[in-house]
Every structure is written in C-alpha cells, then in structure tokens.
Image (cartoon, rainbow, N blue to C red):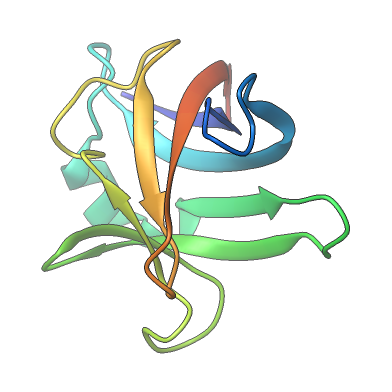
Length: 120
C-alpha cells in the first residue's frame, strides 16, 4: 500500500467534446498494489486523504475525501452541503484511463478520467 496522488481531468461531455485538462482534481488516497483503495489505511489516517479542485476563473478548492454511508465524497467545508459524491471509487481499481463520476451538491454529474499518478 502507498499513499498516492491521482490527477483527474474532465472527460468528454456535450460541452467539452475533447474533455478539459483545465477542469481537474488532484486526490490523495492510499492505494493497494492492485489500485483499490486501502480502507484500513484510510481509517488509520483519514486526515491524509485530501483533494484539490482546479477550475478556470474560480479559486482552487481544497478539501478532504470522506468515506460515508453513501460512498466517497469530496468535502471542502464542515457538513454535507458542499459534498461532491464520487461514484464507483471503492468498487474499481484506479488506473490510468479509468473514468469516475463526480456529482456536485446541485446534482450535476460529470465524468473524469484518471490522467496520472505520483507517490504522495
């Protein structure tokens, strides 16, 4: 297991047919050698699971990754009002090219593709 930094970039959407590297997230998670989240390590050090959101014309948002009853979420403020849900994060190996769906608090879902890794 190792804590890993993962870069996600907006995948193809109707508004962005080629995706967008300018709309991205950087996540820090403990991954097993198979690319699955090491939930045991997460429970030991949940404060190390972080996220940063990069969006043009908006300030960067910094937050933590939370494991909730509904799955994983990115949270920048205390409480659930700003949480962005991340679907399928616990169910699949995180590898280059893997797609993840993030849903913002307003209910808009966007696909993101894993573009890179580096040791955290």
